[in-house]
Image (tube, rainbow, N blue to C red; front, top):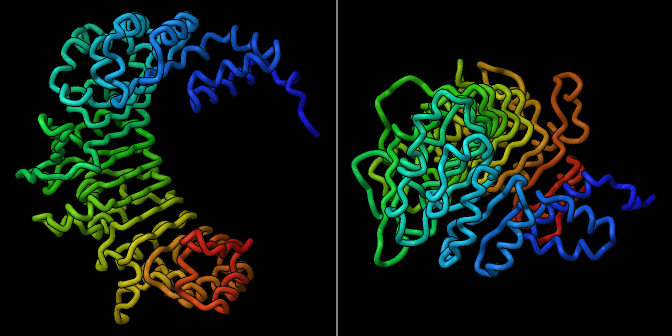
Length: 476
């Protein structure tokens, strides 16, 4: 049965067209107008479609002015990020049009050299989503937030700002702090460019060095205490992203930052995540991702405080009381573990009964599994396959709700077969122990087992995937 496009309501068509513009730019619209008269009418009668404005080097001045005119007084979504800042030069008419309409902006991905021309008092009641980047190369110091926030004192007693999502990309704290409020539900902080070498160690705090070119060095310094202060200003945050932050010393113990609504926490390239995580509590957390990067690994190897790289303090603290995220259903750990962390990880997993998806991509997992047996379990394969894998304190199965397991480490397929037999397609223990059926397993299979071993594992789980993505091993 096919759906006649004439039966699709205009509102749905307009929404589909909007998604197309967000994906392929305004060039997506003209061909639509040629499909049929009705589609042309929908485009012409929907000014908000023209309100999605992208400024880049390929756009002519006439094209931009024409689009802004067609947008009329509709809500505007503006894309003019750091890589297109230079394209704003010599376009004063376009700049004036956009600035004059800043009270209509609902979403913006812009740089400071455009935003500083506006006023926060004109935007705070309409702007819902903002991604703010550093100014064009060599000009960071020229665009201060003083004028932009000049009348902020007169707005303190008005309604809360409309801003719900704010991402700061390599900008000074003077640009970050005034945007933060209890209205923020999505907050992202990207402090350094991972492609640039890190060459400032400093005595304390988070130090980020941005080198836009060979003639200008702009230093962005946000201390550990200041980052925690940022989080205290967004107590209702639901989704938190931190990328490429680097700190070497902790702060004196203070009141824990309580993020009771935090559901998703994404840490990428955070040099030492454990000291940060030990300063916050997120009991409602549903998904946690901690991913290292090659540059982070290089810097960590040179760190004067190697003990800060351990995740074991975090695993221990988040195993009890207000820190325990008992509803966590997704956990991803990538190249962030030390061998000594694995036993603490298993102990923490034992306290996560709702965990459904577990991704472990770390050599430390395999190295810990090769350690001689001891009182403290460090073999995660053995722990997942045992009915007593949760240990003597918690007891029972480790992660009984687990449905998807992805492991990348030094292993053999024979390490996974006991897990498949215990938790796979038809284990006898399911009905008696309320153990969830393990539906998916992913690992490097083609290099770690014989075809016979792989066939055994295929019979035990619904979906078996090889992490190399090239050998074609996929059983459903």
